[in-house]
Image 1: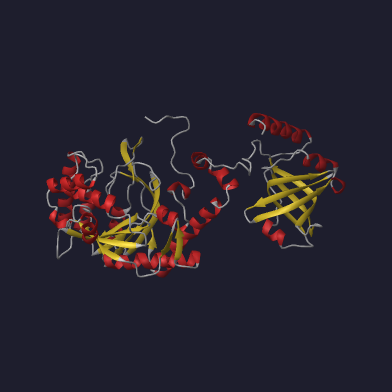
Image 2: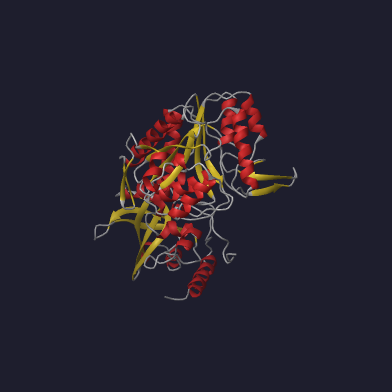
Length: 487
């Protein structure tokens, strides 16, 4: 292979030759009238189409090129005897990667391949950098994520994944709006106070207001303000930001679906979740059976529902109710090899034990419900046993897919829970929730019984497109700036 610098130099020289021919290598408009797919159905007719050159084959005074647009690929045939001298000269200056417009009749070659026999052509954009070869491709994961435009061009299946993503998200919207009667809303991303879950925020500063702002870590508290204001079914699907670690399941900027449903509880939302994802699977994939890695997942309702306490005892041999002190929780964690941080409460240690030791076997879509109250300050406590809250997490393929619960609508009970969070912050927990006085005031005006869901859309799409990493389903995942070293 020739050095990349030499190949680029050759292309730049061709660019200058095209200009000397009096041709504009970057015109502002194309006269494309037919897509490639339409051209494929136009045997015996003249077409005017355009696309990127993805292959070139020469035979003496004639040549073949493969033109690709979003709809497909078609072969174009160029014969010097049928073209003007100017166009014949242009043909010699074209490369793989260039954008080209062609006009001509669609016929079949002697080999039987559908082909445009070109009578006119026009360059639309000259590619001055060669595409990665189809042989060597673009394999490095970081390069694929950093140069997604090349990944889409040369790696088969990548574009299909993102087309599926679009279909999945639009189908979720259709289900909520048209089937369930929800209203889609838009809430602030820049917030005076972050809240709605435990997470570290990104902080920024607004110059005109001379105030610090945060990128949202959740949509939840604004959705509940809308319930106070009289809406009964609302949702937003949008970007959320958490200043946390990165791995195959985490990206600092990700997409969440969050809903609020007045007069409903967490059991109603279990029904909603499983109905929604059965609906999505059927509409997008025409089946409820989805292959993910080495598993065949079944999204058909009903899904298994398992109490957290039962799973905890199964995997640790200990009843979670018996671990009621920090000392007991720490002792159990050390016994089964779970790391404990100095600031952790007994409840946080139990959650860490549960997530590290009790969820790996939850392969099929499963609801784990009734979490200890210390886990979720914003959730409503169970009337029969206030040690637990009306909450559930979704698990698929061993991954947690979203936290959901009946919302705490008692302002004093929520204030007490947030005060306990304040103590956790003082103890050193960087993800402790903060007290939102404005939201507490909204609750004081009254909010009906309400329940919300919060599935992470990226992980759902990972599963539904058989993608092993979250970076495979985010077009432009967060990356360290090129050349910057890790501290």
